[in-house]
Image 1 (cartoon, rainbow, N blue to C red):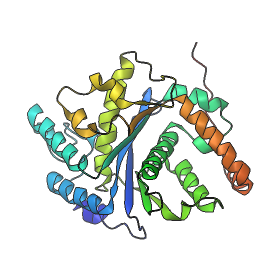
Image 2 (tube, helix red, strand yellow):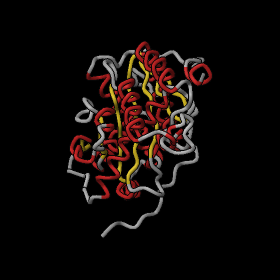
Image 3 (cartoon, rainbow, N blue to C red):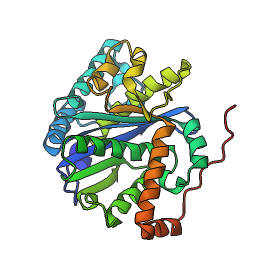
Image 4 (cartoon, rainbow, N blue to C red):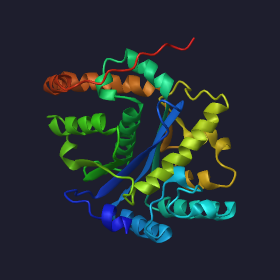
Length: 299
């Protein structure tokens, strides 16, 4: 079973709260990218894991392959009704009581323009790293709101090119003399076969489909605020109800399109942090710093 191989055996990780995240879209190919996932207590995560493995019969679910000949579930031969019903079944497994669905999407061109002017490009990293860091901060805000930041929390992502800046951010927390929470946080990167990353794949993929449709229709996401709630683009949810099944109840306060103002605020926070912890900045700059891409500003 996929859970036995990649799911429950998380050696060395002690987390009472778990946050999962996965990416959708490609920076070079898509104008918008997304990281989506969920936050839940470990007991609820175990329930999700059990129910997910029953639904998939232990086979790996990957939304990008779903409905094609490459799908390990055999969905390439299913009717549209069967496919929709199955996706809604999976959505109900993760969008349940006690789970908070999270997402962060951003416009790649807009982000790269901001990054070219940022004093902390080495912190923000490429677009997917920025999404990953916002995903973590979104979770931390919800934990603060719920009075739970002093609990142990584990953050889990799919293995890939977002590891560098996320790992550095988590290490900075651990190294910081002023952080109350660094020692309470752990993180890891796991293969897509990991059972609890598959619901994150579903969440990210469904939301990415929505924001791409909105962007293609000429929408401007930047409303002058730090984030724009996904719910603003409800008219781009799929008519078959799958999008609503995944994000309903969470798309006003937990699923966001991230605007440049967010990163302006984060840059100010980074400046404050490095002023208080100059040794961390020196350590960062001794490493191979991320170099932002050169971009031509839009007219």
